[in-house]
Structure formats: structure tokens, C-alpha cells
Length: 261
Picture 1 (tube, rainbow, N blue to C red):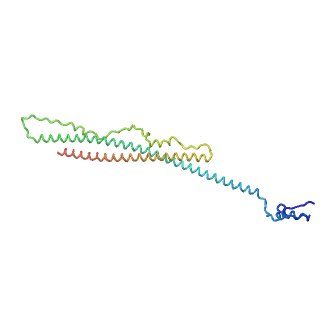
Picture 2 (picture 1 turned 135 degrees about the vertical axis):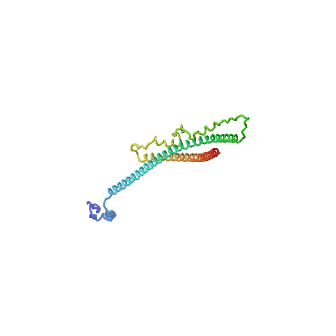
């Protein structure tokens, strides 16, 4: 005699006990289990679909974070290149300023030499005028031959111009170490290669950022050294200009005294 069982989970009907009274004990445990099983739908496919959706969402978030990071490195590289360009322009300006300071220093040296020469001429003029005054103060002796006074030729140099000529600088400013650091910008430009993996692009950008930071550090050290040297040169120029001004005032006073006498 066949037994028919109806699964409540599949058909919605309860299991009917077998009609054979001698087989009740054999199937009691199975029937009790099936009758007491919770009534829930089959969700295996839905769980798999839900898991795939979570994975897709995580992948999209990962790509979004990677793209933001990549864009940040490009922005950082752009700012570093701009800073490097400004540093190179500052270095060029400092070199032009150094050339002007060196020309001024040469002019002051030449002026100092001319002032020393004019000081000797003024002393000769003083001596000549003193000789003339002493000659006219002596009593005239008819028996003595007339003393011929030779005029000093030193006064001719009084017309010497104190304005120095322009001194040409033969030094190539491009050889300066500060500019050599800045010239790296002229030979390199930011290029975007063919599409690569995000990891490779990030690694490449980080390497370029490290190199740019090293160049900026060297450029900053070079600029600081150049500023220190120019400050020392300016101090020397100030000292030379003060001495030249003092000598010029003294010589003007000496000449005024000579002319008044």
C-alpha cells in the first residue's frame, strides 16, 4: 500500500498520516519535523543577487576613492610645477640684480681710485699756491734774477671725469647654480601617458612629486645663498659709497679754501 505525503512548505497542505496503522512509529519523527518546520519562501537566488549588489557598490566606491586620490596627485603636481616656475623666475631676477650690484661695485672702486688721484692733485695745488704766496711776500731784490715760476701741470687732471664707463659683464648668468636648478623646468613638461592602471598612475605621480619637492628644496637653498651673498655685497657697497662721499666733501672744502686764499 503506497504512502502519500504532502509537504506543507511546497503545497500548503499538511502531511496526512499514513493509513497503515503499523507504520506510524516509523515516520513519527519525520512527520513532526516537517509539520513544525517554519513556513518561509525559498530565497537562495535573492541572497546571491543581494550579495552581488553589495560587491558592485563596494567596487564603485573603491573606484571613486581611487579617482579622487589620482586627481589630488595631479593637482599637487600642478602646484609643485607652478612653485618651481616661480622659483626659477625669482632666481633669474636675483642674478640680474647681482649683475647690477657688481657693476655698481666696480664704479665705486673706480671712483675711489679717481678720488685718491684727485687728492694728490689737490695737495700739489696747495703746494704751488703756497710757493706763489711766499714768493710775493719776499722783498724784491733787483740784483737777483727773476725766478721763473713753473705752473704745475697737475691741474689739468682736475677735468678728469669721475663717471666710470659701463663695465660689460662677460659672465654667463645661465651658469649660475640657482638657474641650473630652475632650468630643469624648461626641459620637462607634464605629460599624460596612455591609460594605465590606477596603481601605476599613483606610483608615477608620487615619484614625480618626490622629485619636484627635492628640486624645490635645492632651489630654495640656492636662493637663500644668493640672497646672503647679495646682502654682504650691499653692505660693502654702502661702506664704499660712504667713504667716497666723505672724500668728495673733503676735497670740495679743500678746493674752496684754496680758491678763497
